[in-house]
Image 1 (cartoon, rainbow, N blue to C red):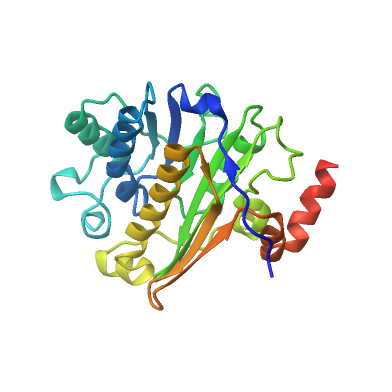
Image 2: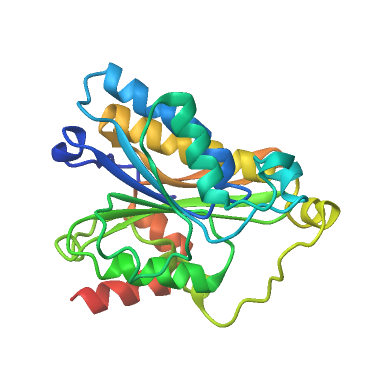
Length: 267
């Protein structure tokens, strides 16, 4: 039996300055998440936040015709960069000045930018290794929200890191601390080349649900300044969802060896 969840408290300063969010990947999950973020930014401002969100979107891929079914794109978008299409659409609709980064994300490419949240909507080990390397090298606190899915199930896991808080026992563990295998070895996933193949491999509702959970965590954490869970697993076939409470005991149950190993490194 796990201990009751604690509250993860966001630092006060993040509620009084622009909140820097970098979305890595504008495919199945990223393209579903991004149109929801302007409403969160507006709500925060309405509640008294002076600036709201400042979002940058990273993706070096272009829209293919089969992307227009499962991803949030349309036929006129085909041939154009995914990040640029989505950011331009959002900026025009909401009068924002969010930034597109039509390039491959690497640990080096983001070093000149400030980051509070890194939202990883990627499906490769190589991309996660780059995010992991950047986050672990950060001096100030960075939250990494990772999303991964298959045809009917997915997980969203929120971790945080920064050299100032590396030894804090209540620091939210990174997805790579709970599941080291997520960045181990080579990738074995080839890109989908047709709409049918894409649907069979990743379903049609899984990405939208993952985007909803990411949005839910951000909305609750930023609106209240605290939150009691840092991840969720869900399965659309069974209709079940299970959250991860903010609890060291719960984290140890997920990956005992990995958490103990990280604790020894910190010591």
